[in-house]
Image (cartoon, rainbow, N blue to C red; front, side, top):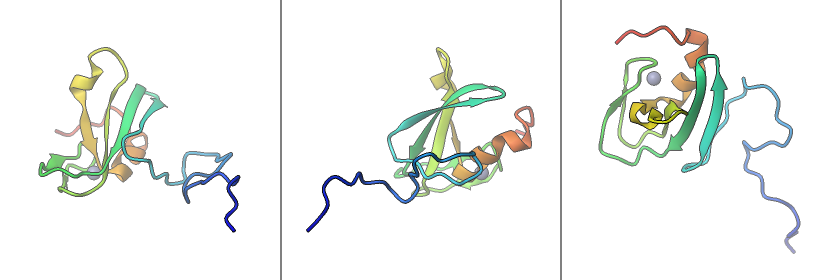
Length: 104
Ligand SMILES: [Zn+2]
């Protein structure tokens, strides 16, 4: 017997979750909007199923093919042109590091 009325919640989907400090795993293909001190961003979790190597602007390390990560861009017209690939953890820590801290 399987209860059919129970909504399936993933292990990371907790109703009433509070705080943003807890790691959140996102579903691939779902865009999320995030409000940050430096504006509103669209964040997409991608599987990394590509043969391209990206460089994470957070830690300046490579994001190797097959590594799930996030792609983010400013949520304004034309913002998608500025898409950046980030390690998931680096994106989360971005605000802590300071939005103006750029070391390209
Ligand atoms: Zn990184």
